[in-house]
Image 1 (cartoon, rainbow, N blue to C red):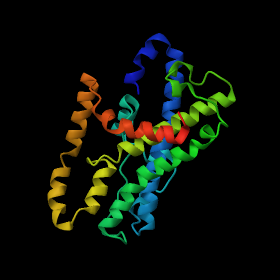
Image 2 (image 1 turned 45 degrees about the vertical axis):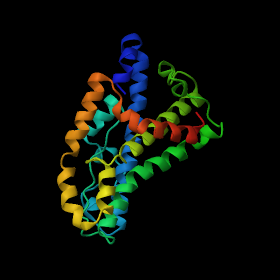
Image 3 (image 1 turned 45 degrees about the horizontal axis):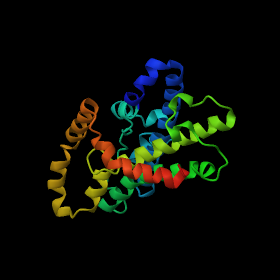
Image 4 (image 1 turned 90 degrees about the horizontal axis):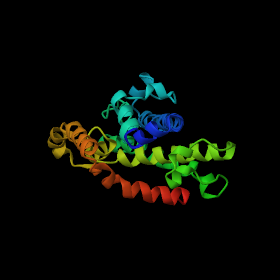
Length: 233
């Protein structure tokens, strides 16, 4: 996000500050919902680890991961602090890990579609974000301000949800796959999984330096389609 808005910072610092405040708020909502949902499902399936460590909470501070948050702010893709889960305590075993992993991304998609309802129904107006006018964010009245907030919350929940379904560790998609593959392959998968952070960081760096857009080419069509379905824009 920050990389895409650097020209706005140079040309209109006030608009940049408004945009970043809106981004920060939306980020907090998306990450908190995501990680709380992991903790909620894990607790419901019998593992009280997250609850004991204070992760069964809607306090954003408990869920923010420094590197993941920085990634979200800079490039629009990132993650929260992983919720600790002991799969041995889950009532569904390894399948339980899949359910816990899916809980985060699915909760983001649910929140996005719920928040988008007033936009879809025309109760709220058209946000400048829908037409790429970030310099006009939070410059109108109450109705326009609520529209901007709703639009950004929808966007970040979709981004976080879809991005985390990529099957690369430490993203949730890797845990989904890990819980579904046959147990006899679990060891080999865990070995490959260790390289996930290296691959992810490498892809992000290539994207940032060369502006290739590898990540966006993967999740962009999905996010765009879901945004259109949710809001009509």
